[in-house]
Amino acid sequence: MAAGLAFLPDARTALPGYLLLFAAGSLLAILAARSLSASGSGPGFLLLAGALLRVTLLMRAPDLSDDVFRYAWDARVASFGISPYAHAPSDPEVARLAPEAAAAVSHADVRTVYPPVAQAAFRAARGLGEGSLPLKALFAAADLSVVALLLALGGPGAGFAAALYAFHPLPVTESAGQGHLDSLGIALLLASLVYLSRRRPVRAGVAFALAVMTKYVPLFAALSVVRGAPSSRGKWRFAAAAFAVGAAVWIAASRTGVSPWGGLSDYAARWDFNSVAYPALETLFARTDAPGAAKAAFSSWEGRPGWMQPAFAFFYAGFFARAALALLAAAALVTIAWRIRDVETAVFASLATLLLVSPTLHPWYLLWILPFAARARNAAFLYLCSAVVLSYALLYPIPGLPRSAVYALEYVPFAAILVLPAFHGTSRGVIRHRAMH
Image (tube, rainbow, N blue to C red; front, side):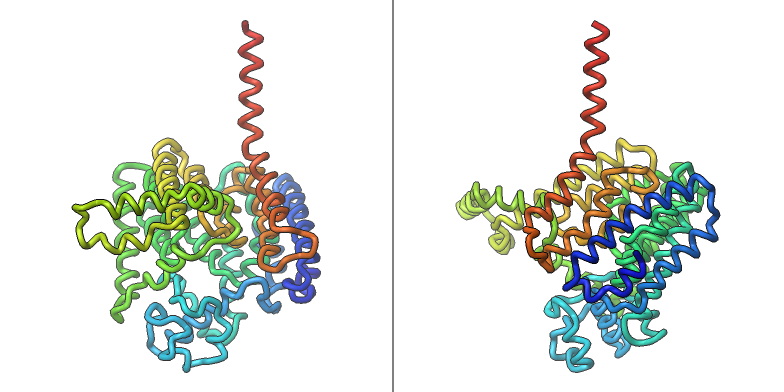
């Protein structure tokens, strides 16, 4: 499987072969995890096998995603003493620095969205050399460290999860193959949980802050992680350490007078891909003309303060859908943090909620879920972590495979596997209740 992926032609033109190899790799990863966890294989073999699998893709040029070129561009701009948050690659002031590199960046009109720790990683990789290889090697190494951290978390699911992650094609292809930085943030998040399990709240807070400053995803599990600290004092120490480190990193990145906020507003307002919740809500709001009715009511408000005038720009179906999903996510995250006491389960539920309500769900986003799904042996999310690669067919269509079929193959089995245990449990409860009477 690894050799096939390594020598496959450009996956954009050979996507059916890529998907078949990926499916085979997913099945083999589950078989390997079951076998190796049962035999009690040590960490040395898992790390060696994981390293070999990742090395096979390091020399392959990224083809399904060009994010790594944005990473390289940010590092190049920073090497000239210019904040990557200050200018989009298409801005004349910076485009002249490396016209060929700027041309390789997608969405060149948008400033970078990557937080300060990610930017430090980009610059560190550039110190090792030009091009995508140093970046891919750095994030592949971070991805391999996830295997060790899963073992360090301990518990009955540690061996299975570590083996599955070591062999699974999703982290292999998205980290070593496409060069995505998510593996670094995931490693730091898991390190935070390891420190919490060992009652080291300050170190856990530092690791958590660095994870958030690598990619903002863990921020949405902050309530669950804080609540999972071992004591009231531990909670305060964790929160204080996380806030202090996060604030220090943010301020340091703002020393040029430009906030690391960068292009996050554009990302939040414009991006959508491979989501089912967002387009459904957007269609609902458009057909019911809820934004139009709200805009009419807003326009008729005679006592409306002048500073609320810019709100007129937000009366459209897409914004209403995003706002509704944000409110739903906020309510779910608070409920999860309040009701789920086990910190690992709460983090898993928080990240899963975030990704399912997000308007954008790229394959590499599921890297945040895979370690937790593997430890819990959650069949639904393990399926989604393997099926999400089908979404590349939305970008690079396969003849005979319509978009509706892509969504159906991704989400229908996932939903069925997710709800079936609850339905089965309810049915058994009804049967038992009837038998008693």
